[in-house]
Image (cartoon, rainbow, N blue to C red; front, side, top):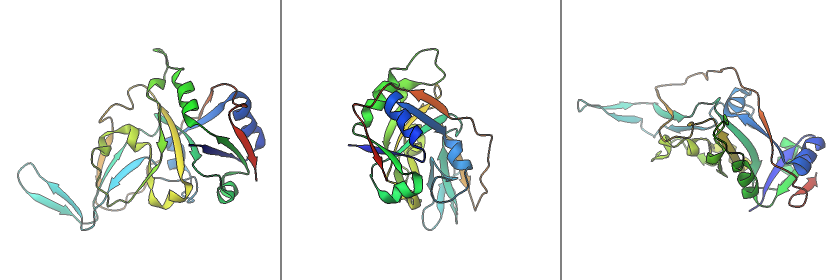
Length: 219
């Protein structure tokens, strides 16, 4: 299944074709951007469970507490996961929002496999645990199941209002960041302003010439 990467500048699209150049941004980049409904999302990569009727908590002493308006939130460290964003759609509407130069990648697994070849014991990033897949646009009322404990699931979660993006992601993390239960858990009882931390610079990776396997569209 093909994916589509949009660019505002043709030179950046050309760099993907000729060098396989990828720019991966930390999750904190998207959380820190203004919540414009396009790129900025302070809840990007956060699983939130806020059932209708309130969050029910079973206490160790046998008490049952219902938190009206409460939510359970699970997230990975936003500065340790770097994301490459594309879409499953070739669309003039998406081009208007994300840029008129679009590279069609017929097989995203090609990028994943080339990234995995970078795996090395001394690398800061664990390329053997590259995560990829369609973004899961979740209602807050949906039960979390086991997803709350799986960082590789959390990096593919966004609120339902972003479903129009039909996003496909490739993500790499620092060592051990994708380990099971390596997440931060919080319980909120009301609106909480996002906490913005310093945002790391993006990382740039080159996976090799792609000219023979990808196609450039111009809108």
